[in-house]
Length: 345
Ligand code: TXA
Ligand code: MG
Image (spheres, helix red, strand yellow):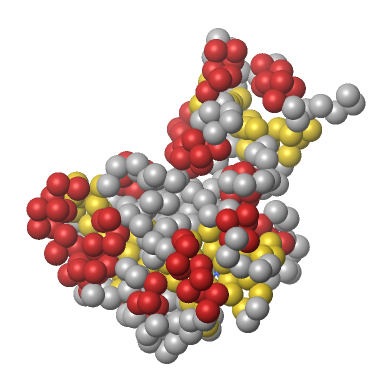
């Protein structure tokens, strides 16, 4: 299929209506959101969901997120509750996805056979306009080929999706760079299934108690079933192994300095001067600014593949605040390979 690639100017000068019509007729449109790019189609059309799975090469038991323009637009599709509206008042539109019991209007193809549905109300103006113009809720996973990092710019989208979708809307770089926080509401329980820019502390301001699903930080056993099916799949992994270095920043820097030149180092901006003479580097952001690391992480993992390292080394992120989301994504990219750099001290 031929993929039409349009910029923001074209979108605003009339292509927006065509994009909406494509979605409404079950075709595939990649669009920017504030988290990562999404690969969208009509969430109420089972054939459209099948096309999404086919374009991504994604197993069809991994459910899709349903994007709506306003929190109350969830009513026809999900059984909402008071906690949902409390979360919505504080965090929607924004990088939050809430799992609720589904209604019959959402076909089981969209939810991977589950009786729950993931609802998200994105903040990005192009995403919001597309939802409104299409007149349907938009099912959209991240717009990467299954197993690759989520795309955070149009060139990474084009790499994966050119020829596989009807249209790609180039909205520049994703502001956040990590996928939305996912919370499952189950009666009085709120369970964090995927950490993101809305942190546990932020959620705890609105919800009485937030449990963290074991799959967020732990490796699942062979036969364990995660609450979020996506957690069981290999994800984000670069071609060469990624090893996360756990230790004081100064010890990690020493380790990186003495690593072989065939390694690629994902280092902080502040470390570039100390490392660039003998190594191939990808600067992933500023040391004390995790948002800058979140913004660059996924494109850095793709860049690592282009550099063709024998091994990739990176700092193990902290587990608090936004760090938990980085920790979760990087642990999975590293298949949980962590090396202590201050052993014996
Ligand atoms: O930021 C985001 O959330 C992006 C943008 C495009 O909105 N979307 C995204 O979608 O990351 P995706 O499909 O790549 O990840 C959705 C995750 C998967 O891990 C999936 O298993 C989980 O959400 N999920 C979806 N519906 C679910 C449900 N009913 N119960 C549990 N987990 C669910
Ligand atoms: Mg994804």
